[in-house]
Amino acid sequence: MNSTWKNVELSIARELNLFFERHNLSPVQRKPVNGRSGEDIYTNELGLCIDVKHRQSIPKIYSISQYIIFQYKNFLTTRIDNLEDLFLTDIQPIKLNYSSIQIERWWRHMEDHCLEHPELDLIPALVLHRPGTRLIRSVFLIHQKDRGKLQQRIREREHAL
Image (cartoon, rainbow, N blue to C red; front, side, top):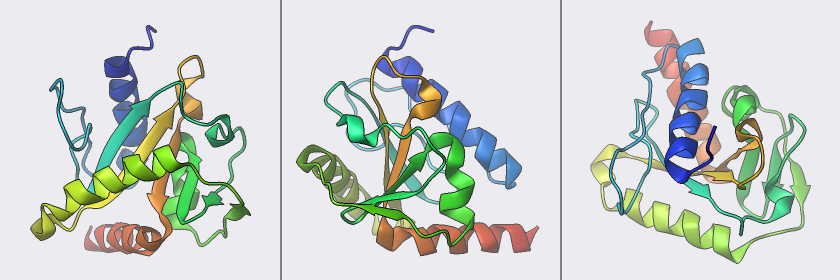
């Protein structure tokens, strides 16, 4: 597949939907707008506000080859195909002494966007993909303070069914 940013966003939405489908959550889809500000993927009942970053400038340390949750400063990351561990378990992350100013800026931009819509109670998230790497190795990133909120929303949804 041609790895343009549009194709990456579409593929990431499909990968997220595999997780959402397994847990009876509504599917998400790419926002078909160029030059937009804010999320790249429409949210579902989890309230995730997801920005997909397809950049060579993403530090290689964010390329995760194992199914592990890592903590970089205040952020939790895992591979896009390992969301169960992040969203559904209390597995403790492996703490790494690393941070990226650029990733912090991207996340802060999404947090600011979410705060513009307080009535939606959105949770900012990033998906990081380095060009030239397999899409399955993309990294899902949230702030550590939001993990419990996501887990609670999934539990409430599963109990409501």
